[in-house]
Image (cartoon, rainbow, N blue to C red; front, side, top):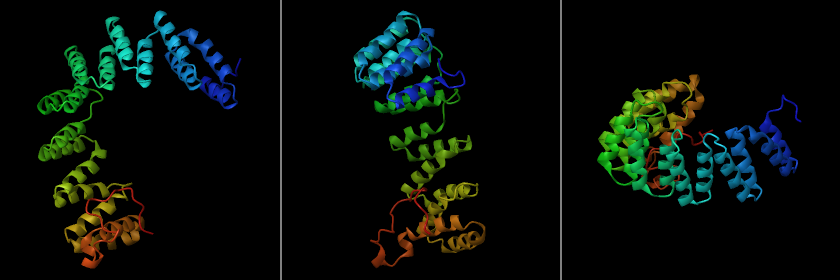
Length: 300
């Protein structure tokens, strides 16, 4: 009996760390009689970790026979992790036939893991037809993997607005197929919707296609917010690549007293542009030919 104030899984980890895996397994075996999915999941993982894969499989099968919710899911995904995809898919189909929640999406995921993309598309399409609008986002990604561009775009657009569906992957689909203008527009829409992490992806796409002025505007909006000091490295590079030296100097002067860390990033970015070096120095390791990363260490 453990102290009730001790979190059960902390107790399990403590037993494992003490070299008592059998006691940890016994503890979990006692708990799983209550049919808790998390206990089953941790028990099966622990059994696998200690060379008892057959026992882990039996744990999930017993749970299925006992009617534990989502037990098919646990067994199928464990089999998939072992590379036993056909068996995992078979379990997924049983779950679907039994009417388990989200079983069709689970099956589509398992088929994808098995590289059975066309079958995965069929199940995702069925999920959407059954009213799971968000499944259209995953369907779009399957279409993209299958080089079905128009279908991917249509499916993703239909999914936007569903709970949990971000806007930016539509831009990634356009980008994958070389539709730069459409990708830029989709990334901009994502940023406007509050998906601010996409700004770096938008900046890189613009810079990669020589649209440096547009990339600069995106970065300037980013550095105007607190917590974006590393983005000044990109700003320094972009301004220097465009020979906008007066703006670079003004920014450096403004930051000297107010934010010296940001200034260090700005100057480092400027020095990574060939435009700040003589021709003889262009081969220097300091020079980069594409937008530098935001998370490089600043100059000290």
